[in-house]
Length: 150
Image (cartoon, rainbow, N blue to C red):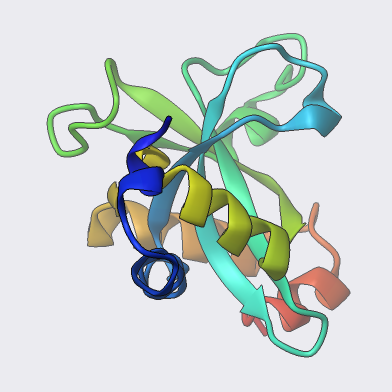
């Protein structure tokens, strides 16, 4: 039995809707990454026409095998654990791509796992993420437009 099971359905649904907002950090298991542990994501946009929620991933370090050049390393934003109490240690936001979930699936996940919803990231971190994504040559204009960066 999870925490969400203790509340009525309408309360859980309202909670889920309120917590899909820009900058919200959520701990999720991302099947497409082929990792066996959950990762934090940050919601960075909502495509209402396709009912999708765009997000970026928080990593504990900048992987030199993936981010092998100074440019790729520069596409990560540092996020400190002192300002973000859900983090155990200073980490990095990967701004090289926008991934997405179905909004319906994310709402269901939050309804069933309210303890995985964390605070919003600081305004400073969110501004840096938005700036890097807006100026990015790695992210398509299509994705930028659908999640509100163009």
